[in-house]
Length: 293
Image (tube, rainbow, N blue to C red):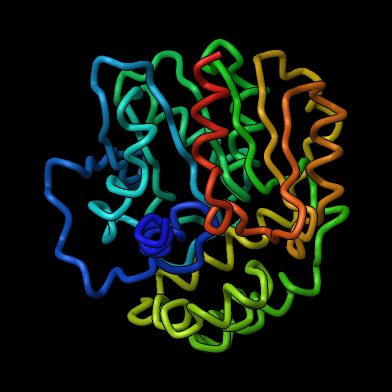
């Protein structure tokens, strides 16, 4: 169990992520793992791995200061359970987000990447901000989504901690990387987990470039302005909502609201925070069991 925990630490930015833990210490990813898709005037990277004969599973990550592609091989290792059965595609954010970029824009660009890679119909897993993008895709292109997995996300930030977002935005505007990582870690993890891995969490932001900060700020504001409450009930595919009882970022009530709107399968982890996907030992097992149904 400990080895699995450490592996997920190396890639937790995949899901929530401000930074890519351990990225600086890893070897560069194999070129064959990462594909770059051209979308209009920008590009989006995609990590492709798993069982190429299996059904397609797309994972959309959360708010990130740095690209997770530097941890590609660690991600593949951490997600081995899902990769045994599924042909997995993990999409990064576009490399240059324009001013005013919204969650709807992210969904549109992700669908364009689907087209470029020949992804017709997929199981769609989105975490935190990625879960918002996934909701938008399921509403706008229901024919493309076989099932939907929403992890630590919300249909809006009504119940969320806007003060936490405001602090992250202020620190990003000041380019105060270490303070940003500290503030983020304190918000998303349980106190014991954060205390144990604080050094790795703070170090994960090292090397962030100016474009990284710009993208982060644009994405953070996109999260704050997102609201799918008027359209969420249009989602008809099978869905699974995974939340945390102590979510101090988007609020536990956000998961309950999704469950009520979607009338779907769900599980709320009591005693865990927003980054439950990094801490709960059975998280991927629950996802695998849902996908097999």
